[in-house]
Image 1 (cartoon, rainbow, N blue to C red):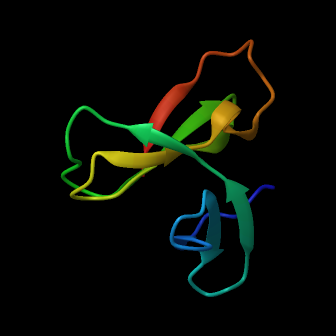
Image 2: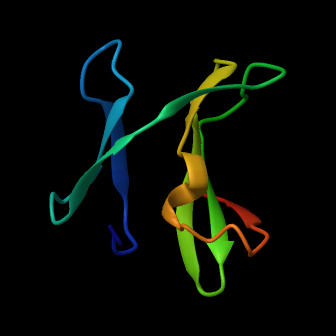
Length: 91
């Protein structure tokens, strides 16, 4: 699902859930995605969302929370395109 640019809140549907709710802060758009556990080498200094860019579209790839080495990732970043190398963009 394509979401318009804006400010979003990302939260787990339940405490131990792999399902995330991504919702605009003005409640104008929302989606639910299944995430997979990701592990960094060190605790993250700041919270961040990482996107992959395929041509002129951006796809959410990873979610990291400040103070934690554990994060979430979306496999295949929702593109279905294995042929194009991703360009990482941090938000």
